Length: 355
Image (cartoon, rainbow, N blue to C red):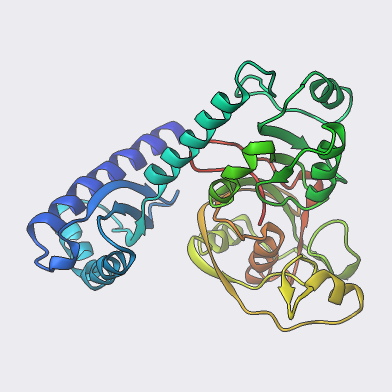
C-alpha cells in the first residue's frame, strides 16, 4: 500500500509541475513571471501542500519581483489547477526558489577542487553507505590518513554533543580544521556530517538541506527539557486519548508552522544561550520562528508511545514539535524519548540534524 501511495504522489506532482508550467506560460500575463522555469514539485505525504520549485534569471531585485508576481498569481494558478486536475483535494500551492542546481554545481566544484588539491595523497574515503563510529574504527581511520580533506559521516551515539564530536575528530587528526553541518542534541543518535580541512567550504550548503528524523513521543508526562533527560514536571492521564485523535492532530502539523524554540537550547537571546538562562531558573520570552514540516507520519502507537517519522527544514526542534502535538492531543507538554529520537538519512535534499 505504501508503495502505491508513493507512486500516486509522484504522478500527481508531475501533473502539477506540467500544468503550472503551462499556466504560467499561457495564462499569466504578468511580465514579472515570464522568465520563470518550473523545475520540480514536492508534495507532502497527505497531498495537502505542493511546493513548486522555480528558477529565475536576473538580479536579486528582479527575483524578488518574480516571487511577488507569483504570490499575486497563486490564487489564479490554484483555481486553474482545480479545473484541469481531477483531485479529491486540491493542494495548497507554495512557490519556492530551486537552489539545488546552483548549490549542487558549487558543491561539486568544491569537491573537485578537493580532489585536485589533495592529488595522490591519502584522504578519508569509504562507501556511500558507510558510517564511521567512535572507538577503534575512528582511531584507525584517523591514523591511516596523512592528509584529511572532505566529509566524514559520523553515526553519533548518545551522550556526545556535536561539539564533542568535532573536538574528538580534531584531536585524532592532529588539529586540522574541523566543523559540522548542523547540530544533534546530546541524547539523540544519528547522522552527523563532519567537515574536515578544505571540506569545511561546503558547510553553508549542507546546513540548508532538509532533515529526517525518527522520534518516539511519550504521552502523559512533561519534562523541563521536553525530552527524556529532563526532570519530570507533571504526569497526566492518557485514558481518553485515541489513535484517531492522534492521527487527526498529527495531520495538522504540515507545511509552514510557527515554533517557539525551547528554553533548553543554544538559541541566543540578548547574546546569552537560552539553556544558560534555563539552568539559572529563568524563563526568557522567545519569538516564534517559521519552520516547514514536509512529512509527518505516525509509524506506530504502543500504549503511551507514538513513533513518528519527520522530514523538516533546518531550525526545527523535534522535541518541541512533539510537545506541541501532545498539547493539541490534550496531554499537556509530553516529551520525546531521546533514546530513540533521531534517525537520519542523507540524500540530495536531506541530512540528519535537528537545528
